[in-house]
Length: 494
Image (tube, rainbow, N blue to C red; front, top):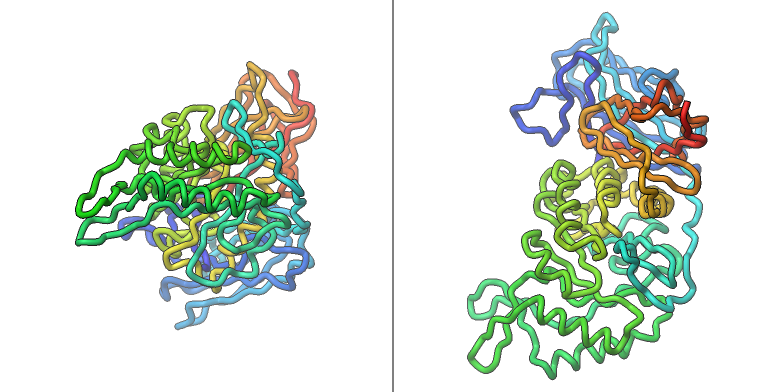
């Protein structure tokens, strides 16, 4: 999917996306890029600008740079032609440094005056192989704060559901739990599905889950567990998708409504009686029933119709994840579902997916599941497909920082910048700020420490760049829906 996130320059109309409502200000150009993460193996960067109006006479200047005020690392210009709407650009990534860069497309009038700027983030990374964590899973458990432990070490599940189409080769070496068949890391952990109920609309009824009787329930569970319990990479037993769908037991001509949480708890207890060393899992789409299901399985996977599957992914996501944590309780592990192709592919971008992943983990999710079903993601959506491999490597480093037990009085930080969601963590002797721009536009943000403070260095570990610590804080630019991870070393009082 070629993205179209438009960011306004200072003084221009407020930024909007290609998914904007008709009442929002019209933007005359769309910036398109073929990938989010480029590797050292890529031979070119394909960019393009689409004109939405033929009324402007002038030119387009495309630049790649570290931030909006930095010198260009690469630059090309194209004169606008009557009747032409698409302007392609190609750059050689071999001439660019590793790390994060901004691509800006300036729309200039005939006199060279800047009218609008479209902005996009790209990365150039060395995609080293993900390091397998275990050769054998002895025990999966839950830390008191809900963190999942495999053989006693923290683990963040990061995987995708099945889609209806072939996966892109851009998704490689990134998903650490089996489910989709896409992009597995070496030695991924196994998520085994136990087929217990059966969805049906027989006899003209609304969709319900036909649940087996006691004897059949035990039989199905025991057959699946017995067949898979010796797998050395077994992680979890999945007992129900959309667990909130009403359950009925049919006996002859009578249907009896069942208590869903109680039946699922019974199934979980049977599984755990056979295998106490691995965890049971259910998935829910209804945010209103979370508390009732908290004991129905060891892990709860949750999708929200207000964020996961909404037309706009970001606006309600942090609020939804906070609510899940509150309803389930601090010690209950939950994985958050992100609709990668739901409600439709055109509603999602690589920028959405990366921002949503950071926000979910920042607000307490203990793992991520990407829903790639329904119509799926077209193979031509190369920028979207390219995000998962780079994102997986970031999550691998980010998760230990987010879950580190914190001191009683962590540094107090405030932010000035619309739409910036952030948290502060202490980890291995350094202070980290993890922050997301939840706006679909370029934002300048300033972070200030409330006490007099100074840092020797401020590094962005994923981006191969640094920013200066001035006064009592730092200032930086965020692209549309862009996260940053700042590492402050030597932080102390002035």
